[in-house]
Length: 436
Image (cartoon, rainbow, N blue to C red; front, side):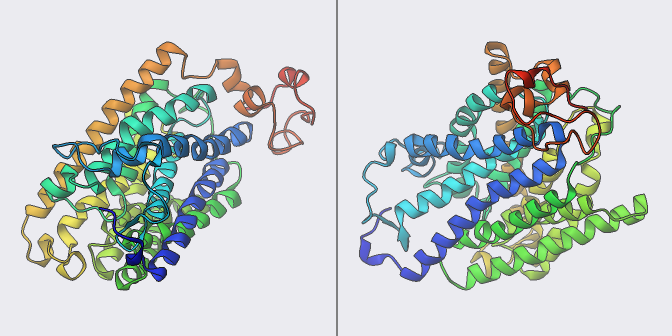
């Protein structure tokens, strides 16, 4: 698994260093994306849930997460060993493929960070911050790490035994976060006023900025997964751009036909939906396939975000509708559009490969979604029973920024409504009531 330092390629290493920084930037981008989508009273709490995930997942990953995900398989393709716990034995001379092992481990760490942060959008406005601090490291070890090993680890059963394809994380990132978000929605229950009160995004420019940073970082996410500065990385880079564009256009088309007006939020959400769907497929499909994948995600996800009102689950910021549904679309469409020129062997139905690859993709989707949902639901229920996962009703009504963090994002009330909020906080801030 580890080669001598002489095999490290400087070009590949330089590209992966840049890609790692790009993927890490996605978490602050996600924080802004989510922060703009919530109401003013919980903006800082939303930002904090993403930022604290960077610290929590990093500690867990370095302690044991990396070796469990990418260490030598213990058998049956389910989990890696503990030979590199605490990053033991992985000095600067260790090389994996053509890049330093420590860089590879850091690159994979950034994936784990953003995946955990994604879940927070499903439970925005109503989760205890203390419970979130416990949930993230436990979830990373029990859910993300095993799935990452199944898909990318040495001997992982999905890649090596089942033969399903996932280039950059449709299964361990998108489907896992979406299914986990759905589980926590059910554990915490809906927000106060769900289906009754208007809960519109308070800052759409912030949403667009966050989406732009996510899109920028996604080039490192997908093209970096080629693990080298090569032609595959270039093809994946272009596929990523193309799918984001058709996702955006597909969502706006639906809004125009259905609602009579294309929206800023729709443009941001459509781009993200296209990027989500192309994540698993970007290294398996041609440019045409990427365009179709992005368009399909933009159209389907624009309807899927409304399912929460019909099925009565409160997915606050559409993690289920975009990441779970988009991840499923992208993973399944590999079975239709995979090309030998990209995969090196496997082909989809439309390119003469029959239904076999589609069947493998479907099994992987069901297995990962079911595992992530079941384990996350169990973790959520346990934490709710032990320490409470749902914020108190008065905290939720006043806003988590003031009641949990003793801060407010804006100095002059809520978008000009209500009494001004004092700059100084605690203990006097506890008496201040913000508008919902």
